[in-house]
Image 1 (cartoon, rainbow, N blue to C red):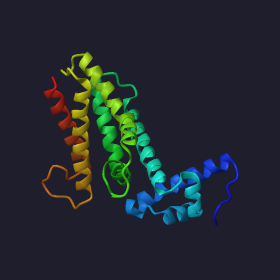
Image 2: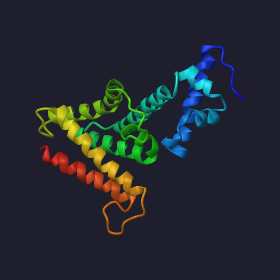
Image 3: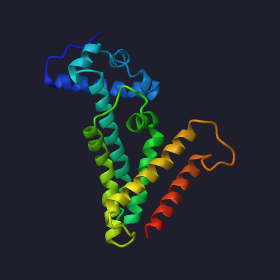
Length: 209
């Protein structure tokens, strides 16, 4: 039965309920099933509730997209606790990124791929979302450059090289994890995937010295 919404508090609760329902649909059924009807049914309300709270499907997808980057920021920030060494912080960010991608692949795909051809966040939305996470890596890279642990006349550019290395290695591992293991190949276990990321990061950081 559809819910009656009459106060800002109830509207906020319905909005959160719809976002939670959309996340369940995404994780259990995939991005292609993020339809208004499926999300409304999962939330126990009507499609009108989505229009009331978000204005439509696109705005709801944008909310999911932004929520994903907040979760990624948390995953990249948590391992930094207690770490002061710049290289250790860069490595912690890398492994936090990997953990997020492997634990929430459907959301990761919505954030970084195009599983829905009709959904393309605006450049400003993408910049705001990416900066939330990329700035963590930039800060660690700048600290490493200031400590002369790495050589980088442009730490932000170096951070981008590190970011793309992390993203590439993790995305390849994620693709391989959805297929049957290939005996003897480098990414034939989660443990090996973690080692590959560590080795790749060390090789890149060594090059930057």
